[in-house]
Length: 91
Image (cartoon, rainbow, N blue to C red; front, side):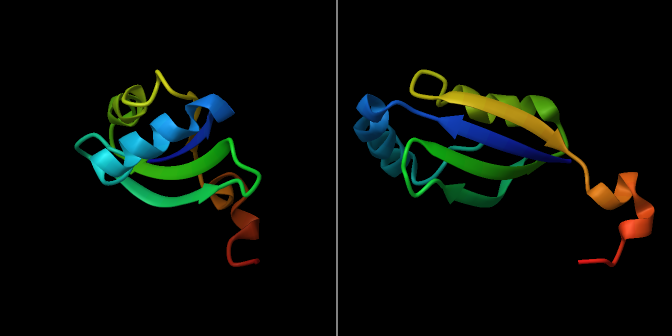
């Protein structure tokens, strides 16, 4: 299952976030969670990460590592063609 993690941080948290990310050599994901892709808002203060996990608890556990430094919203995703099959194959 795919999840989107939309995360935001205050400018005062930037240095602590960078330090922790470098220490953990990445986003510090729980076992069973794979980062599919990640984007950072060029204006700063916000990022978007697509995660793949078979267990929603694992996706939530990954977020807990960062909960003291940023606000996160984790949203389960489904391919739109699962809801609207007629759109399959249309860009």
